[in-house]
Image 1 (tube, one colour):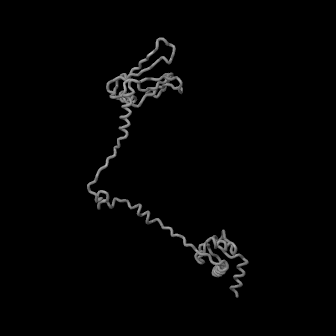
Image 2: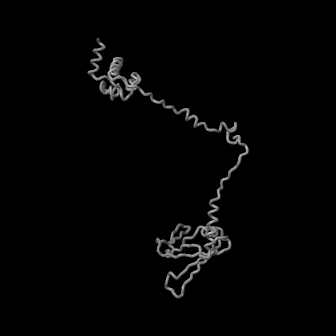
Image 3: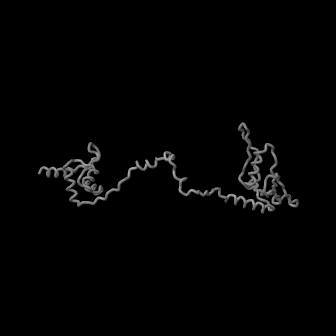
Length: 237
């Protein structure tokens, strides 16, 4: 049986508080004697028992259905044994009886009004100087300084300077002079020496040099053999 919350709560509290099994309601079956075999002629009404139910409606209509998902009733003993007690053959939906619709509507309005009441309270502070909101002298040591330390330790990345490209021929002459000084250069070193964009330097290096992927000079550039010879001849002159 599907019942409203206003009915289920008193039932649960009553069964939990009382050790004796007291009736919580009674079901009245009304049947038309002229149509004893017609299921639609049967009318079920549930009348609540007890005087402690307050302003809750006392009478409810029960709509019976047979078309629902098959269900069964099980029981479990203290030893953990489970047994099937029976099958559910009828389903009932409770709704307030026509005689109690006005009373039920009043109950719903009261419940809605209670849910709209805000529990928050606004307190006006007489002292508007902010003394209560700022840390007192004894509380200074309690303030965590982790955020400040993190800010200090985080290195600030400097914006990369935009370098202007030189003339290609002029840059090639500078590169040859650098390779006269030493045979192997890393890209980072060449960027610092020439003050040129790394991508532009790579284009020149791909034409003039060989990149060492392994060995003692791994990660550096050196001139191609044909350019090495011209550099050596120039140095000899």
